[in-house]
Length: 246
Image (cartoon, rainbow, N blue to C red):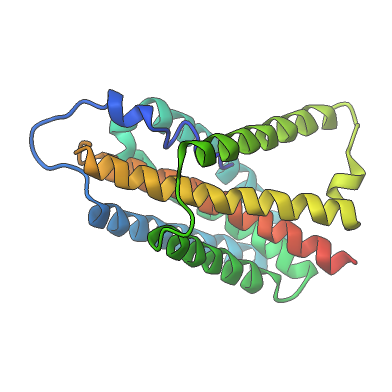
């Protein structure tokens, strides 16, 4: 499953400082955009396959969901520690996440018709809105802004980890995960934090290009942005499911 961070181990400023500045081509924003488009295409292709499997046999999709989630998580960890392998592993991560997202999306769609199209539209709408806000300078990735978003993101990650551990002891947090006002409010906050992480991602991609990071960082940066988009989509999907349950 995707890491719940965006100013995360994937795209923190220090990685550009530590990266070996090899001779040859350097990272560019244009190159990163192209590779991001390629990764998104792979996610969509895998998701369509997984969705199709669900339509043919609902029970057969669960191995794809769990396999994609676990495989994606493992690949993400490897990429974080072996950034130079990102050109080879980022496409594999995209395929794994696509299998997971396709399965999960099909399950949600079976319960609430039209929810997936709404979630996809809102995800890309949020992405475009954040990009416009960043490019126009309305939202700037200042040091204070980064610190606030990073702290909030880490808080959410710790909360999810605690909730995950408690679930093994059959202890759940019904108010947060319910369709009541508290549950919906929590999801709105998480969606907002995920969206703000996109600003940090855009800024760090530009920093990498400006500092002449190695060419393979285009794949690494694309992977990092994909992590944020997957998180944002899942949180929007969760929010819409809560609204549909009311």
